[in-house]
Image (tube, rainbow over all chains, first blue to last red; front, side, top):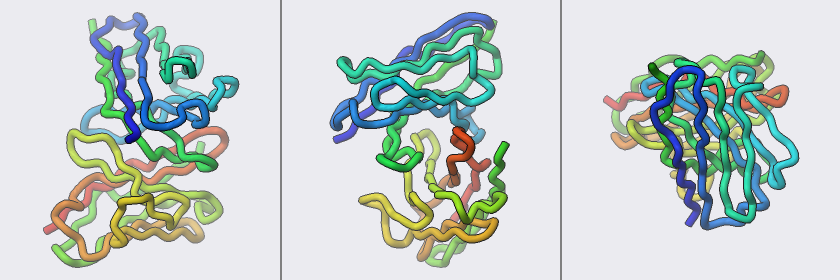
Length: 119
Length: 106
């Protein structure tokens, strides 16, 4: 069974940093692109970033480029999102998701971790 | 940047057919994917590559894509189909989601 478990969310002050983690199990992590999607409760889904299977290629939404860094540790089956210079508008639930092979869509999602940026 | 337009809400009578549209410039040449999200839960992929259903998704869910509009159709709607539905494409190295459509089953 595919499982994605996020952690690392919490309350942080504006300008602060946070690192999210997503531990994957139930599939061969090293062969899949992975991504992060966020959602303000009651609002829509917003894509954040994606990374290829070996970590050598990444994409970012304009709203986070230069502030967020996606990475992965294939030995630990873990995906990361390092978030710096956080703003109030980054407050959201952050989901880790697996991309389907050969198509940019997300076939498995974690349950999400809440990030709140507030003073 | 590429934009996807969905109606805010769609209502359907129990057992009838719901149609959710996703508009985008020449969307017919792109792969469109659809997600269902129930309150307090993570999204679930219900249609990928315009028309394909992942394992475990009922045949009542179907998709089409042509011209400037992609469509998700829910046949024989059930109470359990009440949810938000999002379309999604890949464009210019960016994942784009539609704004979402709330489906209410009456």
